[in-house]
Length: 307
Image (cartoon, rainbow, N blue to C red):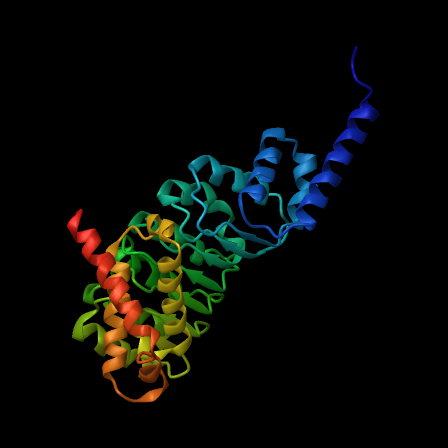
């Protein structure tokens, strides 16, 4: 016997209301949220998803290991949202290039986009540059850190920023950028009119790269450039807290896939402390810093012993 069409419509309405309630009454982070999104995808009733998706304003899946299927689930649900997403945090989620490609069509609608340490390389940078070039781009803050990006990756991003009118903050700390990665930076960012903060901490850009940063500062004095820890107390504090967090929870070492990240923090602390003057230099000399540095050295020794 065929179900009454009205009963089916009523059931879908009830499902939509139930999912709406679940989304509204919980912070959108952790495995439970991902499970809800998978349920919507498995149900695969667009009418229900269209009711639920607009309720998602922020999505925080930080440090959750996501598969390509998980990324496809995020795309299926979020594509039905008619507005921008205030925040999409996929830091340390191991999505890789394949996962990023599945999310590609919705990335331009994320106001704050966190892609830290996801094994993203030049291929991902090409995709992200297309996002930044899009006329519909709404990205204001972009975090795309991690050694895999490298100079070739960042050379894809600079031209995309040349005419971008939305990005205000760009975080490229510890991305493996060398001197070569700064070659077109000044030319492209001089033409950009909206970028307010650029972070390049933890990159070996060489003397020529430092000279280019100096030239960029002269051409765009309103742009806050953070070349090392001594330039920004807040960033220094954030990295100190990050290392302390790893000390307290060794399971997080799985997320720190590259000893270069810890090594960059150690080098930054040494340089900052050696400056001798200023608030940041004093911060680098506070009592807990030697313990942080000792921990980093011990972890570097561990990685080298088993590499």
